[in-house]
Length: 393
Picture 1: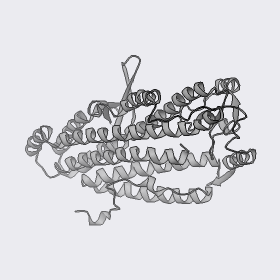
Picture 2 (picture 1 turned 90 degrees about the horizontal axis):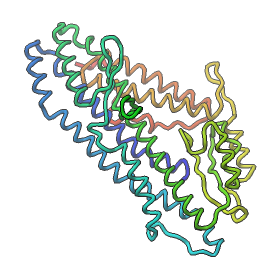
Picture 3 (picture 1 turned 90 degrees about the vertical axis):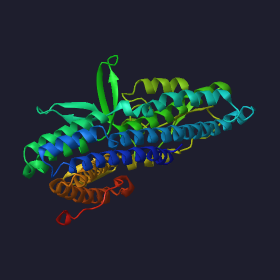
Picture 4 (picture 1 turned 135 degrees about the vertical axis):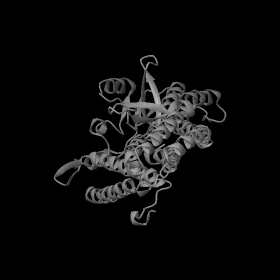
């Protein structure tokens, strides 16, 4: 599965949870807006109704629906990854005079997929109890709260803000709005035998886990077919732009022993962390490499070509990373605009809208200078619409 195809497949999952994130933030914003014109007595009464109401239940139900859809889509994606790995290997089965293999007719390959699927689906399991939102204490210390608990906490903040007087309500709630949009829905993980929690945004967690699942399929299937047709070497996939540490080895063929030695000496082994290279089992001398030296050298030249933007120099590879950071920053500001608009916070909408305009222009300018295609679909956030603040009631 080439990088472009894999990225498109992963985006289907990521978009689903980015959209869900926006829906949840919007619901929090709507809740905040309900307290804006209430008296303290009315606010206390509404708080009890909302804490026991259907709004938060609907959020948790939507999380479970997204989880179920993703588990089904994951099964399909991993099967496709296995089939493509097997198709690649069939060249070597034929070269050895062996019958071609088929995923549909092979229990051992199906078992590999089921095993990886079981592990990878963990990111989608029990989202109602494994997702959270990061809010700040009065001293600025961050703490993770389950979505249901965070919803109740925000309601309590609304009641407290009402008690300070309606003239200060939106100002008092603005910081909470920023905290919510900055955090977004997070997937909670535990380290040190479950004692210390940490979290990353759910959409980022989904991307990481899906990529890791496809990697595990590649490793499992390639190890199995390699044993069956007697592989004595490997070939590494290639792409551009590529990080410096992998440029000289991508697209090359190595004996198993050579590759093991090279990979063990890398600070970032092939197929780990954010590496999107894949390793394929081969029989040396049977098949020509997929890339010529000329093509690989061109990839290196492209990856290392320099651009200058606002006095700073970037390689093409670093420029793609800047692009990703700008895309993330724009989406986060759109999240802020969505929740600010839902809560009727004019200051929040105006600040976010101004920042969106600035960052989007910077994204276009930087991409043009770097000669990189803009991917406007990555800036899309469901529910976001440019808002004219002067027309807000």
